[in-house]
Image (cartoon, rainbow, N blue to C red; front, side, top):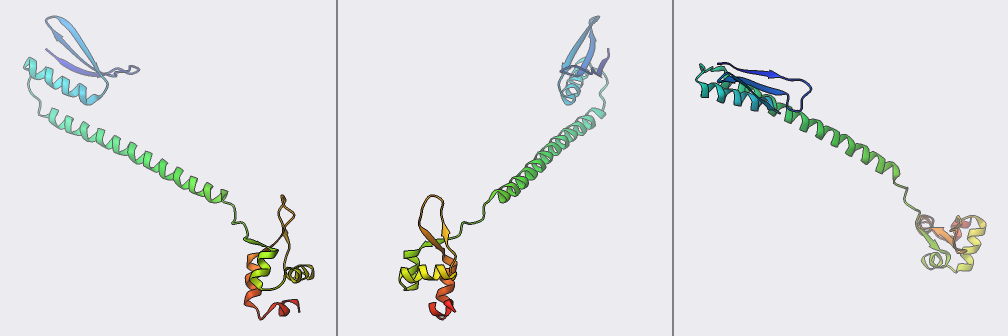
Amino acid sequence: MKVSYSRAKGRVSSHCITWVYRKKRHRKFFRRRIDAILFKHEKESEFGIDENQQIENQVVFHFLAEINEHLQKISDRLHTIEKSAEENQRMLLAMQKPAAPKILRVSEASKVLRVSSRKLYYLLEKGVFKRYKLPHTRTTFIKLEEVEKALGSKGIDALIE
């Protein structure tokens, strides 16, 4: 009696074990080679065919090969996930808009600078401060940085000169 292993290409279950029992040929297909080898070992021991010590080595080798394949797949997946995460971070950084400048109304800026709003409009006309207008309003705005810079200087009169 003989129990043989073969690989049938192009099948869903490509691993095949064939044996003859009572003048009848039997076949069984397996999806994984390790299952086919274990089944072959079972049949050989069932029919009393001489035991090979190599079967244990084959089983261990195939288990290690499967574990290695799974680890390789996992590492490939992790690598692609890391690459996509880095790419997404780059895209998010590219999409971020610069911070909008902080602006104050003329009345608020005049309170901070402790001058009248009339004098502040005069300073706007002289070009000491830049005038900002938003499209949906007619209100005039001044950058907060410019107001802070004016506060840090000696005085408003020093800015005019």
